[in-house]
Image (cartoon, rainbow, N blue to C red; front, side):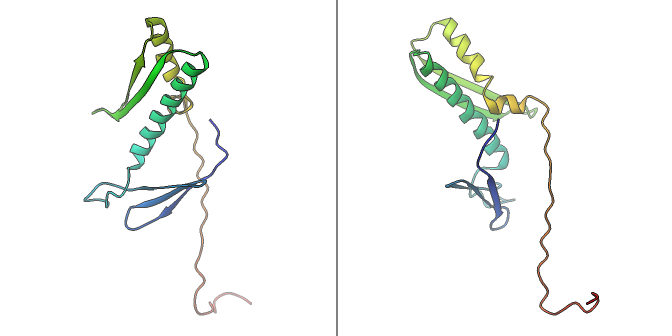
Length: 141
């Protein structure tokens, strides 16, 4: 799964965060009383990524094969054990073979594959120091 656009996250008020992806902007936050609930939580954004990717993959596959899929709706949640539960609702005149195939496609979207394999995340620290208002006399000149 690759993307050519950078996702930028900037601090907002309290725990709220401004998220910018290319020309798109949204807000992430934590629910009250911890945050101000001005947007979905990071976990909810992760579930949204999985749900939208699943829906797009199923729709694209059905359209490519000209199958009579009228609608695909995906509901994603964390269960009590922290597992992700993904419900895929298919509406249309589909036989059991096509339904089975579309459910398999739902498990192969790029976000699903990313979440179910070992993933490496590299953190690159960048520290910005604010310039002081008076010169630091301890530094050699």
